Amino acid sequence: MLDEIALMQTEAEAAIAAADSEAALEELRVKYLGRNGLVRGQFQKLGSLPKEDRPAVGAALNQLAKGLEERLEARRAELAAADADRALLADAIDITLPGRSHRVGKRHPLLATLDEMVAIFLGLGFRVVEGPEVEDYYHSFTALNYPEYHPAMDEQMTFYCGPDVLLRSQTSTVQIRAMEHMEPPVRIVVPGRCYRRDTVDATHCHTFYQLEGLLVDEGVTFADLKGTLEIFAREMFGERCHVRFRPDFFPFTEPSAEVALSCTLCEGGGCRVCSNTGYLEVGGAGEVDPNVLAGVGYDTDKYTGFAFGVGVERFTMLRHGIDDIRLFYSGDMRFLGQF
Ligand code: PHE
Image (cartoon, rainbow, N blue to C red; front, top):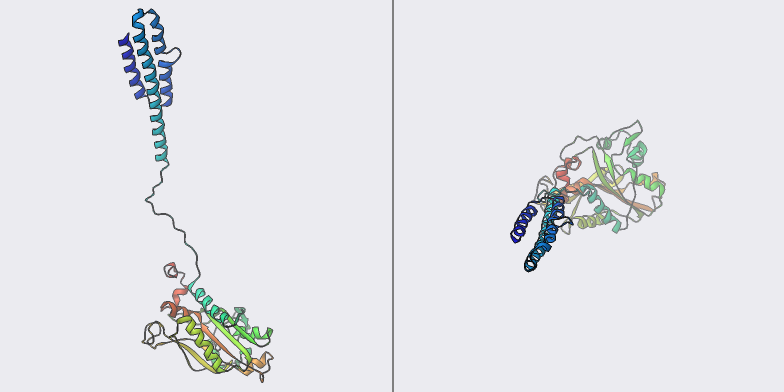
């Protein structure tokens, strides 16, 4: 009978090792260890054995039952582990794939520059005023002291929506709109978009930004204008930057000046951005023409003022060493992504 037990053990162990599912294992458990199982059947035969053989055979049967129990349990654990591995593999992610990056939006370089320019003037006690981009002829020219058919209008050629309605060619229009609603002292800057019928090239665009400044108070002189713009230039580009004023003409200022900054890229030595002149023209300025002040009802015996208007593109080009204005409006993310 011991041989029979040994044979049963070998068979059962092989069957357990070959079982490949929980269900198959359960079947084996019932077959060997169940109430009507083969092992129990052997126990029942014990009674018919000679008395002296019973302890040994009984012990062998007990051991067989215990051993099978353990094997079944071990195999069950093995199968569960394999199942878990399979599930993990099926669910696997490829961590060598590059992730999807999210582009974070940021300010356009022109607006970032404009913000900085405005911040400097806020620090000097100016406040921000804005006006419409679609303007009438009166605020664009008449109120700014342009005589009809004056040659100074040539550089202000712009887009007309009707005989009297046009896209503003300069932020100076807002000087008038602001003064119509304010009494001196006036101390404002006007950031904004302007339009001109210019042929597009490396330094011209039909759409561009200006920052206008206007200060009207008692006793304001050209020296105040120079000092203000000097401080502004140094704040923007550092101590070594200085402002060059040369005579110019604008109908709404008298005297008028062209404003240029020393090129901080080449330190005056000459480079592409300043076209080898050492200076970059950034705008115009002057003492406000009394005709303009009188036009908005200010007392010209009491008040004088200065005004300036500078191109934001120029400042941005100087700041970043950019030599083509078209890049700003290209929408090219390879360019814009650098800022
Ligand atoms: N508006 C002028 C221009 O666009 C610049 C300017 C502004 C000149 C203020 C004098 C005073 O050309």
